[in-house]
Image (tube, rainbow, N blue to C red; front, side, top):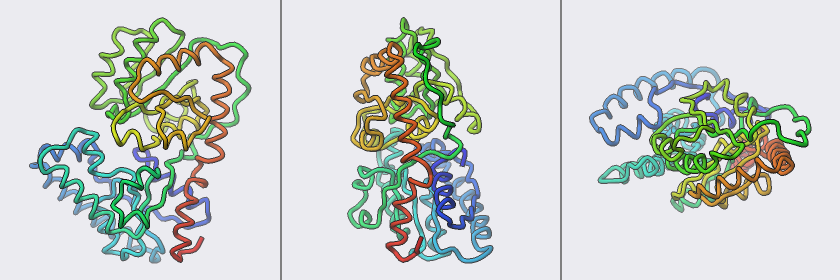
Length: 358
């Protein structure tokens, strides 16, 4: 769950609603990047098949211990595991968290040529057909599903795990102490717009703004190039998951995403929810799902616009009162709407509608 906090949020929410939750986990050992790489190097696919068979055997043993579950929730990236769940427990009991589509991920990782996209779409279609309920994160994502699956899809926001929520903050000082502290963390994919952040860093070189960039991935080199020789940025390869909430909470602003692709325009990233829970002001791209999720509790800039992002951060650095108000707004929104208990409410309502009760 450290690598995939969405799974933990759903589990925490269900437990908080009084349900008994039993976790069955057999790590595959391939992250998303490795799975996408296999599409470019098909000779690696047999290794996936061998590992998948071993994991399925372990999952089957774990799943069949104890009482038969009323509902089986297959966490996201479960495009293959959902078939095992259906085989063991029947389609009626299976809920698939389709937070990330295989075809969407392939396009975002620039795997879109030849037979690869049709193959990924087929994987998505098969997974969707194996579940009675499909979870997505935004209404825009639900609308991308085939029409026959939209009726049994439910929008469950990503939310933030309990460990991200900090105690109520003391009032902000009237004047800032030191530079504006800004943090970004992620896999530096095109969706996240890290290259745009790099361009903004270069424009902030003479401003009282200190940026921490955490993570790595396909766009990191471009982000570093765009930042140039700016001295106001610290690059960290990664931070252990247990330490990340504390580190983010030490900053004033948590950056969301700034990509311009179709997927970037229809998601609300986990870092937006987590940063708000950590008490940071949120600066992210101006898209309908993010506006709907955060309302006035964020500062928005046009996707892909490094100059606009730099201007927004410079404004916050120069206006401590605006910064304090934005921090308070994001923290309040997180406590009111982004806790595990709140985000699973639509799922519980859908299950009740299907006769599983609450």
